[in-house]
Length: 258
Image (tube, rainbow, N blue to C red; front, top):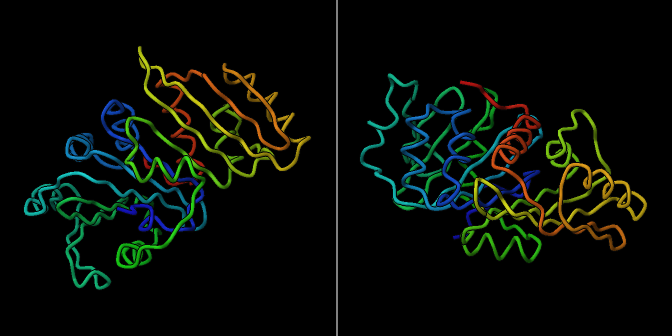
């Protein structure tokens, strides 16, 4: 399944995240958009998530997930009393989808699609990407991870890396000289994640500056080669990771606290 095809080629950040082992992390993120009960029902039936954040106007986050979903219970799970509206998608041969103030969702038996954003989100483009998935090319490691479904490891690839590093280091309104990021995280013990990463700076001089900044925010082993900064064996707590991922979402200016 080329799930990122429905996310599209315009996303600024791509994330692949297996659910097992990351339940509390993912529940915290999803409850920014949907009630906790809905988030738990969804995650309990999901094996892996493919996420794309688009910072362009109108900003949005697209989520594609694989799992096992009770399509026949859609009207019960997405009820009018909980703020959902049942609609038909012309791009999908009038297939049913559900819409709320912050979410559009299309549910099939083995795959679900969501578009998270405010009331200006482009639902039409979201539905069209499902009907006509786009072709994407990623760095080899991230590509392999997305094709394998995560296998216990969270992967993040950002083509506009400055905002991600700002979120990682807690630096607001600072655009760092970074072209792209690959970040890989695996749950360790005691709510810790072991991290490896590649940060591609704009040039070799910028790489030295970025390495210095990263060393103040991350522990781990650092090396620099030309404009690339490599990080191995860095430890991030689940709380720090939640803060970082929330920062990425807030960079898209779409989080809707509940």
